[in-house]
Length: 167
Image (cartoon, rainbow, N blue to C red; front, side, top):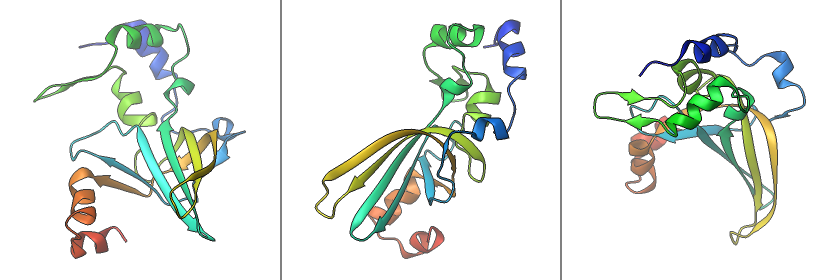
């Protein structure tokens, strides 16, 4: 389904890449090992995770694409997204909530691309207790795009070849 001209005009003004100005004031988490986990055919990668361990404390990051940075409240784009409600996934195609330039581009946490995110960063002790957290506007860069199949092969099957691929 096509988007109205007014929406597409608004979308065309949005940069394909994160600008220096957009980076300002954001917590830079590009140094963290960050992955997305989605279906093999997914194009709109809207969440990612990172985890590290130091001195017995895990730091878990849950990162969500900061779509609100690009979709101004009450704009034509916002109204159209509100009307659509969600992306609809059919067998042979997707009817997107947002134009592809956003959903598959700047608002998708694509591997190797700087992206704006909203992140919850949690400290977790070795017993699994969350001992602290913070929520921040961040800048991330996904290191690996993983699939549910690959993660299952690692976690459930302990598949050595797949584990080596993602080391």
